[in-house]
Length: 439
Image (cartoon, rainbow, N blue to C red; front, side, top):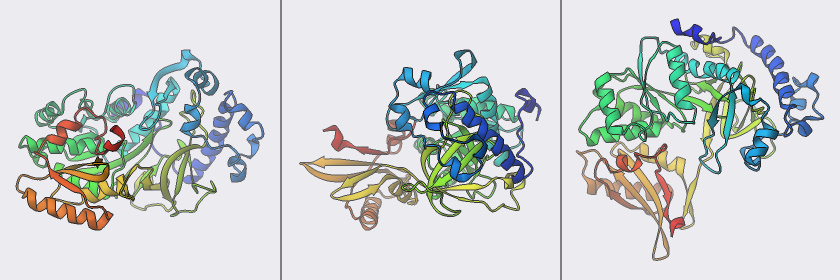
């Protein structure tokens, strides 16, 4: 692995959980001391005992930090009062997800980037990817960090990298042509874009399942079992999920068993708390994930970051997970998600997407809440394989949706490739649209 020395990264996991516990003890204190340099944090940490941070009760005295609090700061306040690194140490800026509300732009120092690379590089180790593979990367390559960091990390791990970017950078038809021509063994990107490419390939008469891609690394979106199964079937590849956040870095990844994310607890300190009481919950119980970066905090001193992700965790070690067994695992119960309220019924987007992706005769879909003559309606547009009778599947989908969600939908079949073209310019496929808000 010739490239490992490029950043001189300690890529291998710690030998034991005792080593991790001692490291966390040291780095939690560093994190709090660093935060005390911030005008934002200083008054909030005045009563915190640095010598007692290993006491869970003392640690929980640190206030939770939310994105809404940061958004209340002006740009000037964020950079002067919250951030702590001088401009001379800034290597680059990372754009937050910004799915809802104003996106934030986090400065990252050169030291931050070095440690962030460890989290990204380990995703290749977790998936068992050896050097000599070639990857086609379909993530945005702009100021959002995932694409660039993952591409660089792949090269550190000896993986050849085609920096294609998202469809807005290289149109999806050209991406399919590159995959056909260069024959990569891996594909990396968002699950929705994997489906987008598969739908476009079918419209073009191509079979990705007969192609060269054997392994897929996904990130940035929830990956349900139904979505994973559909992607794996249409690409003929094994699909691995990874977990990261702009506020920290890549913090975990699936291993060979695909049983939760192994979380790099030598790089982050995690808590799972009750969403209302904020008290810790036990293993196997769902709660909100709270994360404190232990190393990527030189510029932005995040402490007890309230992610909004609903997870549960397991401490037991997997005997066949190799070096990854030292890490606990977290499982997404569900992410905070939107919903439609149509005719008094809540339709959860995540649940509906999971439901639709389980239908093998549906390639892709779009769901819309509309108002016809002042009356709410639920419209579902679908694409189906070429050998499926459109009229039959419309009736089946209408019955199944009514039975599952108690709302009778208007179902329409679109020509193959319609949704692929519509989603082309979007980073994440806009499968749910409330058109009532546009009237």
